[in-house]
Length: 114
Image (cartoon, rainbow, N blue to C red; front, side, top):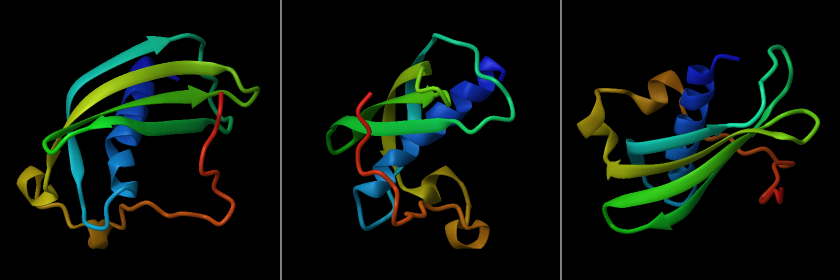
Protein backbone atom coordinates (compact mmCIF):
# COMPACT_ATOMS: atom_id res chain seq x y z
CA UNK A 1 0.00 0.00 0.00
CA UNK A 2 1.21 3.50 -0.80
CA UNK A 3 2.38 5.42 2.29
CA UNK A 4 0.02 8.31 1.48
CA UNK A 5 -2.97 5.97 1.65
CA UNK A 6 -1.75 4.60 4.99
CA UNK A 7 -1.38 8.19 6.21
CA UNK A 8 -4.92 9.08 5.15
CA UNK A 9 -6.33 5.98 6.85
CA UNK A 10 -4.61 6.77 10.15
CA UNK A 11 -5.47 10.48 9.94
CA UNK A 12 -9.17 9.66 9.50
CA UNK A 13 -9.12 6.95 12.19
CA UNK A 14 -7.49 9.12 14.85
CA UNK A 15 -9.48 12.20 13.85
CA UNK A 16 -12.77 10.33 14.11
CA UNK A 17 -11.94 8.51 17.35
CA UNK A 18 -13.26 11.59 19.16
CA UNK A 19 -16.75 10.72 17.85
CA UNK A 20 -16.88 7.77 20.26
CA UNK A 21 -16.63 10.03 23.31
CA UNK A 22 -19.48 12.48 22.76
CA UNK A 23 -23.23 12.23 22.20
CA UNK A 24 -23.09 15.20 19.81
CA UNK A 25 -20.92 15.44 16.70
CA UNK A 26 -17.36 16.59 17.40
CA UNK A 27 -15.01 16.60 14.42
CA UNK A 28 -11.27 17.06 14.24
CA UNK A 29 -9.33 19.13 11.71
CA UNK A 30 -5.75 17.94 11.44
CA UNK A 31 -3.17 20.36 12.81
CA UNK A 32 -0.21 17.98 12.86
CA UNK A 33 0.32 14.35 11.84
CA UNK A 34 3.53 12.35 12.30
CA UNK A 35 3.98 8.82 11.00
CA UNK A 36 6.57 6.08 11.26
CA UNK A 37 6.57 3.46 8.52
CA UNK A 38 7.89 0.23 10.00
CA UNK A 39 6.89 -2.51 7.54
CA UNK A 40 5.40 -2.75 4.05
CA UNK A 41 1.61 -3.07 3.93
CA UNK A 42 0.42 -5.82 1.58
CA UNK A 43 -2.65 -5.35 -0.58
CA UNK A 44 -5.73 -7.60 -0.51
CA UNK A 45 -5.32 -8.62 3.12
CA UNK A 46 -7.41 -7.76 6.15
CA UNK A 47 -5.72 -5.14 8.30
CA UNK A 48 -6.55 -3.79 11.74
CA UNK A 49 -6.53 -0.03 12.19
CA UNK A 50 -6.52 1.37 15.72
CA UNK A 51 -7.08 4.95 16.82
CA UNK A 52 -7.26 6.40 20.31
CA UNK A 53 -7.50 9.79 21.98
CA UNK A 54 -4.54 10.43 24.31
CA UNK A 55 -5.09 14.03 25.39
CA UNK A 56 -7.89 16.56 25.13
CA UNK A 57 -8.89 20.07 26.13
CA UNK A 58 -11.79 22.31 25.15
CA UNK A 59 -10.32 23.28 21.74
CA UNK A 60 -8.01 20.44 20.70
CA UNK A 61 -7.28 16.76 21.07
CA UNK A 62 -4.34 14.47 20.42
CA UNK A 63 -4.32 10.84 19.44
CA UNK A 64 -2.27 7.89 18.30
CA UNK A 65 -2.92 5.00 15.98
CA UNK A 66 -1.50 1.97 14.25
CA UNK A 67 -2.04 -0.16 11.19
CA UNK A 68 -1.61 -3.79 12.24
CA UNK A 69 -0.81 -6.57 9.77
CA UNK A 70 -2.60 -9.96 9.80
CA UNK A 71 0.32 -11.53 11.71
CA UNK A 72 0.05 -8.88 14.47
CA UNK A 73 3.06 -6.80 13.43
CA UNK A 74 2.62 -3.03 13.49
CA UNK A 75 3.27 -1.63 10.02
CA UNK A 76 2.68 2.09 10.61
CA UNK A 77 2.29 4.24 13.73
CA UNK A 78 0.92 7.77 13.89
CA UNK A 79 0.56 10.66 16.33
CA UNK A 80 -1.71 13.57 15.55
CA UNK A 81 -3.08 16.85 16.89
CA UNK A 82 -6.56 18.01 15.89
CA UNK A 83 -8.64 21.14 16.33
CA UNK A 84 -12.25 20.51 17.40
CA UNK A 85 -14.55 22.05 14.80
CA UNK A 86 -18.31 21.61 14.22
CA UNK A 87 -18.95 19.84 10.91
CA UNK A 88 -21.02 22.76 9.59
CA UNK A 89 -17.90 24.97 9.81
CA UNK A 90 -15.86 22.46 7.81
CA UNK A 91 -18.23 21.68 4.94
CA UNK A 92 -21.86 21.33 3.94
CA UNK A 93 -21.41 17.59 4.47
CA UNK A 94 -24.65 15.81 5.42
CA UNK A 95 -23.64 13.04 7.83
CA UNK A 96 -26.97 11.20 7.56
CA UNK A 97 -27.18 11.50 3.78
CA UNK A 98 -23.83 9.85 3.12
CA UNK A 99 -24.08 7.53 6.13
CA UNK A 100 -20.60 8.34 7.46
CA UNK A 101 -20.72 7.21 11.07
CA UNK A 102 -19.27 4.84 13.59
CA UNK A 103 -21.08 1.50 13.52
CA UNK A 104 -20.38 -0.56 16.60
CA UNK A 105 -20.65 -4.33 16.36
CA UNK A 106 -21.34 -6.55 19.35
CA UNK A 107 -17.98 -8.31 19.02
CA UNK A 108 -15.91 -5.11 18.63
CA UNK A 109 -13.06 -5.07 21.13
CA UNK A 110 -13.16 -2.26 23.67
CA UNK A 111 -9.37 -2.25 23.95
CA UNK A 112 -6.47 -3.93 22.16
CA UNK A 113 -3.13 -4.29 23.87
CA UNK A 114 -0.17 -4.50 21.52
